[in-house]
Image 1 (spheres, rainbow, N blue to C red):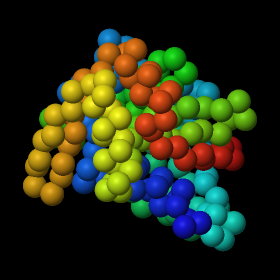
Image 2 (image 1 turned 90 degrees about the vertical axis):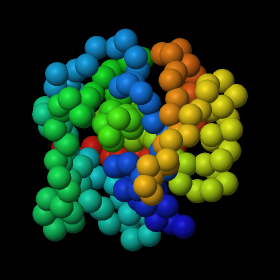
Image 3 (image 1 turned 90 degrees about the horizontal axis):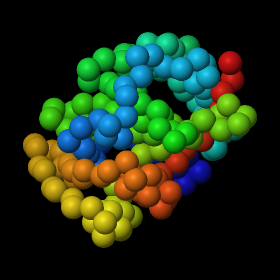
Image 4 (image 1 turned 45 degrees about the vertical axis):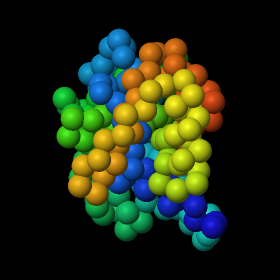
Length: 181
């Protein structure tokens, strides 16, 4: 249980087999950033709560991000800003949108005053809490279930105002990641 924040972060970094998705990058009507802003760039690390040691490293650069393990080895493909990885900024949040087929998966980043970041996603992997989150979302938005092979997408189409309400309602799970450089 102590490793839950670390497990949550890695399970939410890319898309999972159950996702709340969108027809278009979010938030709708907000301009796409051409590069990652300088204030967000840097080296970030999580501390593994079970050992107290630094966990893997997230490196955010002008063109996107990359990951390194504890041994300083790149182990995930790089995320390069493109037509399938889109970054937007709105009301203090960075909206990281990436395409999965014809769906868009969303992750949020909020930078704290101490330069650490909160990495956020709508986590619906757990049967009970996922069901509760979907019920809460469906009170204000239509949820369309889409099944593809082993994946299930729950597509919603919020306005900017509805998106901000979802964020403020606690629907998004959060993991804090410390900036080290």
